[in-house]
Length: 630
Ligand code: PRX
Image (cartoon, rainbow, N blue to C red; front, side, top):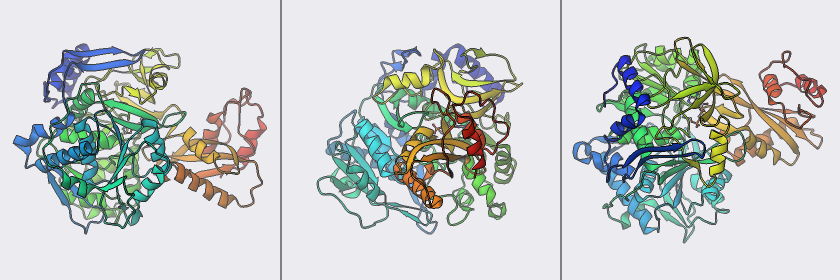
């Protein structure tokens, strides 16, 4: 396939990719290694919805991530692991070594009874073994369900029970900055209510003294010693499940978004190479955690599919000081750096002094992901970090899309601050109005949908296909609805404006208002609550909770602390509300629906222009809330 080195190359490739999508994707797929090639490129129906790519093929994604590279790149570094504490040693892992570790751990899984199709929960810190565990699952055909190691015990058990995992892989613990995180203790707590878990394999990361439950828990290293390093990858069909990743939506519990083996491989591999314009000598660093989709696609699968060398980082951006990212860039001569706007804004707030003594001369491409990047942060990233010469790729995508769908491609020179710019080859975005009619022309704004399938799209919600249909394919029949609002400017370039549903994007983490409300409502004094987002300088959006209590509250600060702790325990620290306001009642329509629009405006500090309040059951409620604004 034609490589994309200029904007006119892009236009040519894009044109072909939409006029002949099956030809385009077949050419892209031909670059991978296949046990058996496909008979048919695509079958699809967005109403049921069902999508199958590359029917008839046989493959294993890990063969493409590892075995395929061994002859040419066996001694090339796959991972340069930078520990939380810069005084501790760096670990360097070649492709040959990573292959060996994955084969061994695949044998450990088999020895512990894992079969194709089993679900395995992974709750790991940012260490190479997290990657090994994921790849070993994929190698034996088990479905990994990685849970970000900042989630609470309850979130782990909810996810394990929803997908029926029979094994969990974890570690004793990890350090984040100077904070000690005892992962095994959290897992033990979770497993009290997870009857399907038969095995817990524990990687010794810190060497802490932890409890091991006889008959259930075993050590990673002792299991690895029992097996050999020869493992033939399981033969997988294209639509066999690869992984489940839970993500929040407007309503209900988080959904287990399911991705399948083949289409995900083809598009994450293609997108990594294309978006970042990756060249084989470059060093890549994505600062995400493997627990989120960015970590799945651009730490584990995308880079390895391209035999890339990458930095994997255990720590946080501000330890030992706010110059840590830049120290790591200099230390490992990183060429492509991929992070979230929240990290950029928080480091920007520490001031430029942490950048002044850094070289940063290796940097060529800077990526942004997870939330809209404001112009101030974009310019700081471009001018101060990129020293005005690096390409910025503002990549828009979602857990459900599997890989980047819109972005300026690195090196093509066409970019605007805050814009995801143009669709990747093979991606067909449309803007629609409230009635679901396509908005054509430029200088317009609407809800962002995708009208044609792409290989790495999610196929279902684990165990609930109807929920998948309802959530993504029923709002606008025949279209995949992203939940995002979007502008197309006069030149035809796209700018994502943010969620149009009740999902709040806090520091790039997707949080469903309903989930936080459920946690708050568990407080013994709370009878009802409503959570909305408000603009936050660092996090992008913060959480503002309005709560109604049925008992007199004498100590408001104590109540606020208890509610925060409750959310911390039920979901995780990142979902803690920033502001909690006690209210007498919530603004509801006569049919009982909370008017969140009003609550959002009040949370944003808007007290005069609240729009039409005449449909409210009791308009006086609004005045009460306004007078109590924090
Ligand atoms: O609202 C969009 C926002 O993040 C949402 C997807 O979140 P999640 O599934 O957690 O995946 C995050 C990492 C891909 C989207 O619906 N979002 C993601 N990237 C951008 C963005 N908003 C604006 N600009 C982006 N580049």
